Length: 65
Image 1 (cartoon, rainbow, N blue to C red):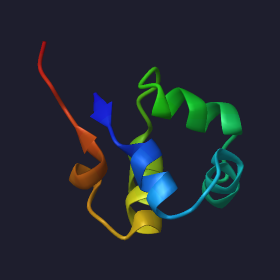
Image 2 (cartoon, rainbow, N blue to C red):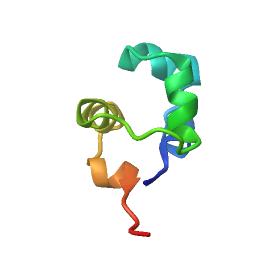
Image 3 (cartoon, one colour):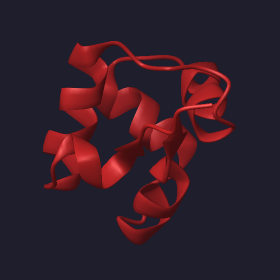
């Protein structure tokens, strides 16, 4: 699954630590998400969308292989 979390984070002037703290996850989780090594739970995806003021689909895109 592709995402643009890093771009959204930078646009909102947040560090990885800031984002992790607001989402109540570890900085390592943010790093893994940004590197597309980890797919978030639906709850975390909703939290990200709410924080960034957008829809989940604006952050994540599914590409079939």
